[in-house]
Length: 424
Image (cartoon, rainbow, N blue to C red):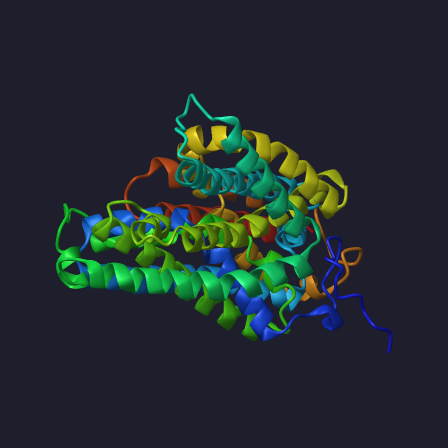
């Protein structure tokens, strides 16, 4: 039997059985993906607005919904062996897939830049004692940005094998060191965790809290198939993804919440500095962001490769060359835009899921044999309308509103096509 090169990333086709990864490897990659400091911001808001009981309820309910969404995408990625972009070629059309590829690439590129600055700026401040403001970024801070950016881009350049190595190193260290720091902070506090949670405005409803939990990583979660396509089967991918997202996100929310109520910040980095654990703080913050950033720019490479036809590796380099010099600007100016963009990606995932289960047999065919359209306008329209609704309608949970609208538009279009046979 011919041995398959397991270091290949299969940008242009399905991942063969011989290149699938172990269950533990997949779990580490997906868990590392969810280790992102931006989720701690949400944890800070939850701690300020909810008591401890409601905080736990919010994590469970939001985690179940987010897990169901990412778990379904994880299942599809493993069963088909396709990346998000190749799945989009079936559901959105060969050229229609450029829309989801562009949206995921733009959003993940933005988050990569923000994450890069989220590491470089606080470390430069703490290590060098320099002042950094939106109008002043000393060269020492830029040096930190460049070094970290090159490292994070390099791991994505070398593909799934490098992502695996980074995840195996980072996940245990971040989880253990972060949890220990959190426990020490609680023990050193004047009051217990439940009492400390009782302080604050407490003006957040559970419903709104669930929306924060879902929104914290629903955009990144849309890229789940890019990684679960290496899973051994759909069942394993779904279970692994659900557990990874629930555990990883919950840890990040707890880190952010404890940081907020005991130290006043929103990052476990500040907690560890307060405990005089500077070097451990740098390790935890750096690895925490690295595991998400390399996955993010890896997804950018896949998306740009689908649009341009160039290799994933070359597109990762292009993305890094764009994100590294613009990271500081992104950090200070782009977070608001990224929150808007986050609402545009869930409709893509909803249509990918729906189309797969409605046309499951076609996903097992080679692309040359599958009846793939150039543009599926109802899928494209569903994403556009869903994104508009998600951003403009302030009732309910934005990402879910967008998904529901996208599904309705797609189903209406699919029914019309079948009746008039115009899409055959």
